[in-house]
Image (cartoon, rainbow, N blue to C red; front, side):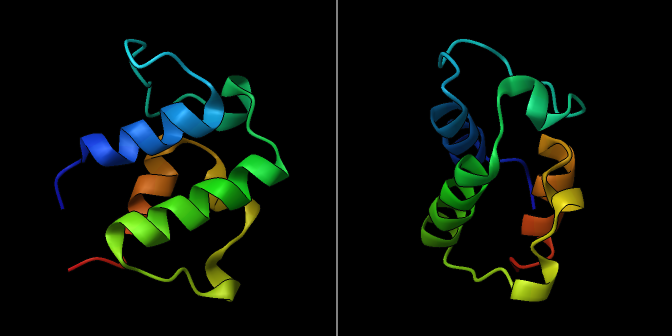
Length: 79
């Protein structure tokens, strides 16, 4: 699956980043201000936008390390 601008918009919106700020896929999301509530909001938004469900046993801290790890987890759920 090719990276999506929708994916980036969801992260930018939830992390409070300006739309014109590029997202470094390897920077830890905690550097952008990720906390547990933001992580839940991101999951909900991704599930709604991409019509997927993250299995409960897959939602763990490592998935939210960076945009890349989150993208990889999302990509495994989409055709």
